[in-house]
Image (cartoon, rainbow, N blue to C red; front, side, top):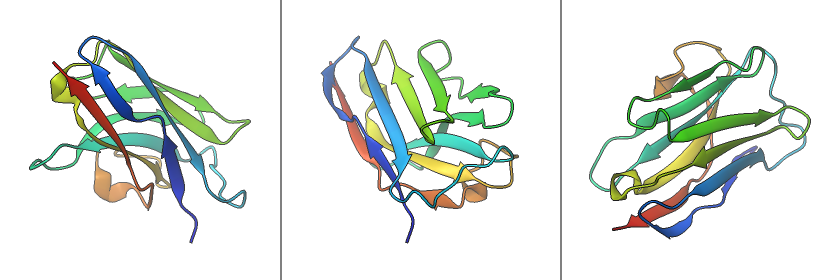
Length: 127
């Protein structure tokens, strides 16, 4: 089964930066121009929430209000990869971060519209 694989999680102090990367585990996994790639996160005891997404066709980017101005999503069409640069991290950013593919190309913040998910990578921010 094709999966997405996330890299780059870890333990950092408040105020630090971290970059997460996501690539498919199989070269047969293709991100088409009609797709969206997104990042979600889930903190302990909380529901999964949208973080950021990018249109593969237009490179238009979308962010949750809680991360706007601190996080940046990048696409790398040549490498079939997406990354999430996270700056000014704070303890509220502590969560498991997941990347996912939305083949519908719409409703970027709705996790139920994403069809393929990674296993997640833990990000822990200490105060």
